[in-house]
Image 1 (spheres, rainbow, N blue to C red):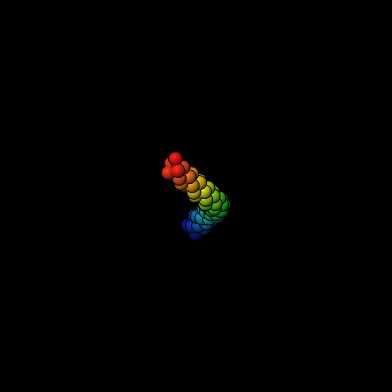
Image 2 (image 1 turned 90 degrees about the horizontal axis):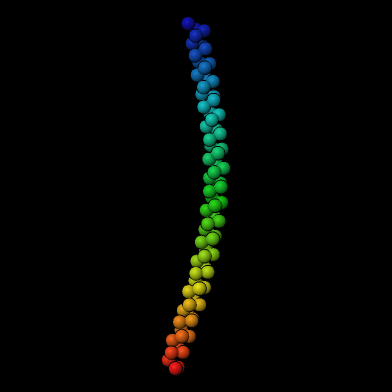
Length: 76
């Protein structure tokens, strides 16, 4: 019976070792994915800031044009 218990223990230990290896692989994959997602997020934040700046510039130009058109109307 003792030999059977040792065999069962060895199999369980091997199964746990394999599971641990799988978890380490998954953890490493998640770290890489997380790093990639953070880089993508940083790029999107920078792109958003750039678009907001361009939007503000366009808004200011449109407001200036509207102001010039109003002054032309008043002058005519």
